[in-house]
Length: 212
Image (tube, rainbow, N blue to C red; front, side):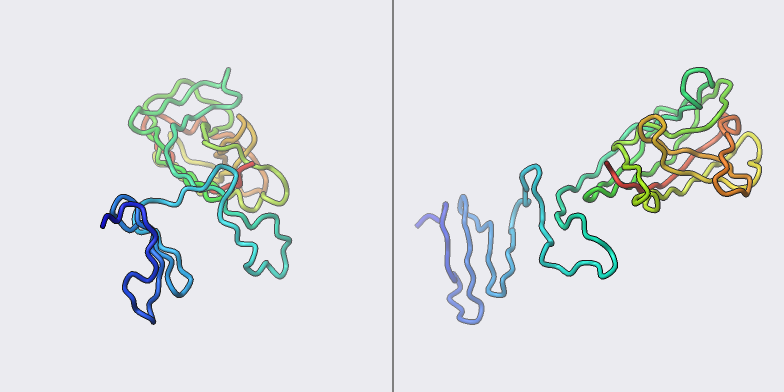
């Protein structure tokens, strides 16, 4: 007869390999194995918004305090990055090429990773601090997450050499952005470097931060 829409128990009739299969439209879609595994033979597992995979039965950290054990989000995509000088109003501009302004992101739970290689097409009197803007998620800013906001910055072909060390960090300026700066060898020093960028410059970065 037709196999359209049926549940088949131990279809192979093997005592050591018993299983349960669910058939839909004449094809086996799901299998419950005798070892407890659940297999999706075709298709994806879709979880309703606000729900996820609960790892509550797993062991917790012996030194930390668990906040959540629910994995409720995974997403990957692209966004258009921009460069903003200072407050974005009276500090000049840095314009990216239309083919060199794309960036990627991956979000697992609340942890967001972004990255890009940005090609500058033109500048107009850039000054003050340099921010990468347009990030896809607002970051959480508190002392608990500060250590997770890690950025690796690179500048190719600056108009002039940096004073000492290129650094970068996630900041709440412009909602959520990446601040590129020169620290001149001093911890916490913020030296503006927008004026170090010209039409031949390339900015690259990889950053990880916790979403609010």
